[in-house]
Amino acid sequence: MTNSSRSLRAPTLGEALVPVICLIVFLAGSVLNLNDLPRLAVITPVLETLARVPYFGTVLQTWIPVQIPLLAATVVAAIMARRLGLRWPAIHQSFLQGIMLSLGAVLILLVVGVLIGVWIASGVVPLLIVSGLKLLTPGAFLFATCLICGIVSLVTGSSWTTAGTVGVALIGVGQGLGIPLPMVAGAIISGAYFGDKMSPLSDTTNLAPGVAGAELFEHVRHMAYTTGPSFVIALILYWLLGLRYGDGTVDAGSITEITNGVTGAFDLSRWLLVPPLLVLGLVIARVPALPALVLGAVVAGIGATLFQGATLAEVLTISYDGYASETGIAAVDDLLTRGGMSSMYGTIGIILCAMCFGGVMERSGMLGRLAGAILSLAKTRGGLVGATLSTSFGINVLAADQYLAIVVPGRMYREAYDKMGLHPKNLSRCLEDGGTITSPLIPWNSCGAYMFATLGVFPLAYLPFAFLNLINPCISLLYGITGWTMTPADKALSDAEGTAESPVV
Image 1 (tube, helix red, strand yellow):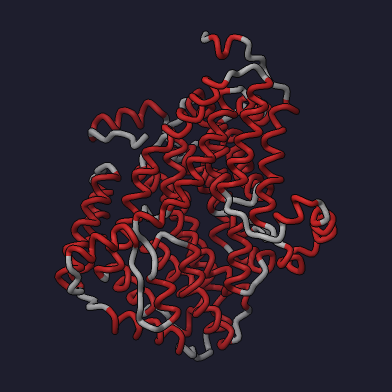
Image 2 (cartoon, rainbow, N blue to C red; image 1 turned 180 degrees about the vertical axis):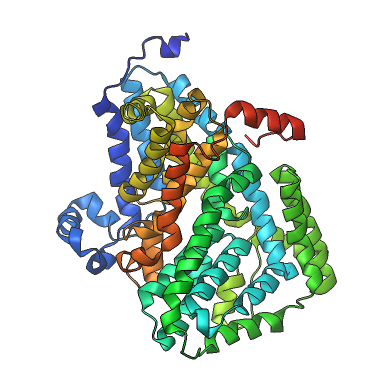
């Protein structure tokens, strides 16, 4: 035992809760704004009281980047750790150890940023978006809406971008058909979060395995067991629900505007399917994520020069700064202006701050104390999965941030999954099944607030129709109870050795 930890004492539950409570309070200033008080009528009196507090009132007038509350909570955690007897060298080392756990995910996020920009510039993403929009038919509008949003989100890796562009257009079409908007919004969100969960381009899809200690593509394959059936069931329900509205006619002006804008700006050759098919083939062949994504970006960069006339210098610039669409059509430009390595810096900042927070919480024993209190109620595999899902959902409710709903439970339960003999990809799947998927259902969560502002439908109104988001956690819990698809650590290790696949982190 080192000198820095010799005098460390075990924290009480109250002491362990102090940094968590501070984190929730600090984050309130980053996700709540006095301008949104009419939308948050239930807690308006509380916020109005807090607004009269000198410092907090100023915070509530401004949107604060989430990295700052995370950093402030880390300071509180460090102070509490010092109070428990942990010296500064050990605290500093806990920061570094926490960051090291996330470096694999950080590297992949940087490559994903490059991939997104180059795939848009080459025409890969535009081709897949146009192909998805052509699936829209009057007789199965809700079904087609969910499927289209799933395709767009899968190829862009962003539920927010999908909802803010194609989703807005589909809301208008659904309104013209006379379909209740909560149903349309539910279908949009189900499709958007299917792609957000399953796309290797998504930041949360990269974050979850990075925190849990799994590899990106094995995480995606493992999620298919819960998200795949959930999506199929959701599509069936949307098909049945939409039959009563199948006699209308679609005023697809906004959809046509997007399609014409994209086709006018890009040469959509079928050869552009090669990069995504290549990456898909590498996923099936169990090639590690980093080389597979790099190869996908390189091939797409060649496509950008061959089909869109881009120069090498332009491709390299887009790789860092992202693609800037200038078609003059707002919906198209909003959809396609994204990507680049620099676009990932904000997410990486959140990861680094959150991992520092988790690192000092873990090193000081506070994280273990909290996990122990919860795990005392989770004696079985099903109980552990249920605890993971409920904790991720609870953090979405309390901390109002989907990144923390992945990072904090990931750090809390990583050792518990290991002790129970479960492979880390089981944990990473549960983190997304309970964290990513439930975030848009909570009105004050950043995701729920964004969807409300974008689609104009209150989250509690579309919640009953967000079928994927409701079904997915239930299937995940069922698998945990029955043991279906719950991969043991020793079997996964044997499979990995047989395919020469190494984990990212």
